[in-house]
Image: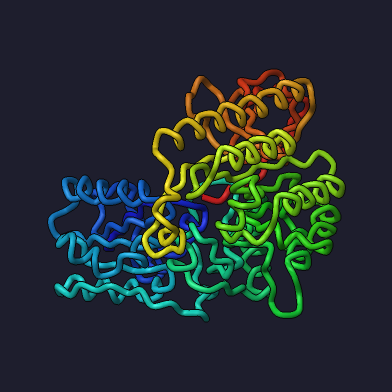
Length: 442
């Protein structure tokens, strides 16, 4: 059997797409290789959200050539492939395939053509493509990534996603439930619903709240998460479904991006500072103990000291449990690159603001987490802890990372633990009462 190795960069949607590609190629007779030097086909599934993500991939393509079999096929897929297209073929003669997120159905045929010396770039959007008939080949783990929506219609001025994944379109509810039921039959108990603005999902008659209720009712599913939502799409119906569906976890990743109305307007985020604050208040009122994480960009063109102060003050007011923080990265083809050049901030200013934001986010998270020591949580054991030491890494429903001794649990177990300590971001936990282990998909 020919073999394929896929290396994935970027968001959870890319992980889900890699699982779809593996499933398609497995159905075509490919085995999965654990290393690039053991594969007949090497695919790098890429991200284009930030420039450094693309530079990392370009460096990795150079490294891979040193390890690959001489006759192996090298392909680039994902958002970077969609954005650059034929330019990747022109820049690297070793690359045979460049395939955007809507072109994975053709992978087996494209690989066969590449073996005959034919190079190709497939970057056409297909607004009907959801890969509903693909059987994903899932990576080992205790949760399943379930794409429910592809593309985005919001077109924030800094964001490349609408240009790499196309317009927004949603899968049918029945197809989503079929996939969720399938992963539950495999023994997976947690699902994560994926979309660029996932809570805008609709099949024309039903909304995201209806989808949450339906997914949460599938036998065997104990936890439902979703990412990433948009503040504008948290309708009363969606929030009621979150609060009223026991399987939906008490955590929301709610991108803020900025706390300044002026910056939010230039970003075309379509909400104001007060609108974001109101969304947080409605969520917390409906769901006690809700954990909220966020994304924040500093250094967007034209950001003044007062704008940055507005971001810092909203960070303090909301009290995020964690935040992914970014320096603005201009992406070719996005409207933000057409803003007047004199709005561009000096690097040293951006660096200073970024460091101040990170310090504030960490201090707030640490203060909140110290107060949680002694509380009780249900956790799902996900994997071995990165630093070893006979520890396993688990996750609570409210998205806390909790380390537990490996002698008290196995991957896939649910445990009740008491939080015994914190580093400021990660907790240690002592089991209160172990629950029966659940099967884990291979």
